[in-house]
Length: 335
Image: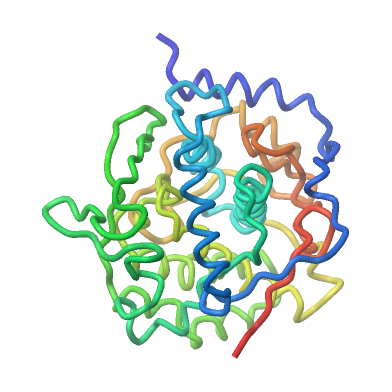
């Protein structure tokens, strides 16, 4: 019997004939650069609307045609599930997640009517007291996991059903968390400063991956500590927007040079998962590597980013400028 992943890869193979720079949906035309701000600086109305928009995706029926997907939340997780091995510990790590954050943004705006600014998690603000963060209030993201399974039993996402396994099969489970202040310390300003001293991308992405990246994932714990399944937790998108902000600030230290600074392998070597448990399970076959368009194992600006038809596939070159037509955003520091 053909597996869910194999059937999904048929869609990937079909999409590889599409131009590397496809026509973009009207929603992606950059008419005005959109602000991304710390969660705490959203208005109360924006915070409520943002949570409701994610709940909208969680409750809306799947449109992807991916076997096993029931909701739009399942659809959104799938590009990360099916490609985990080739979007972690590789050159495409930061570009893929930049576009993935934008896919989430467009979904909650296009399909769920969110009109507010996009938030990121300012992890430095919570590094001394993770559990005391406003994020985990009953009104917003709910709190830590409880019981033997660490299921989240508070807040709007208490009844969230997650479906994917690391192998791309379906096995329903709850949203889990296991907070760790000690782990969140890896996103410290000291580690950020160390990454900023690196002058080339092929070394910098490793710095972000093993420090601020793993710190936020392991700090929240539970499903967030799984490299494949972490997008099941709604706070994933705030964490990776924070990481993207750090990369963008590094890029801005040397523009325009860092609009084109790209490299690293397409196939990961060594331990998977970006420096935290739950390494990738697949995504390294020729159906992926031939599709990338790099003509080798070195990541280039021509490397295609596959979003499983949620939004058009683009190249890494298309997303290198955060203010450009595809991402069309700017991170705002608010004191």
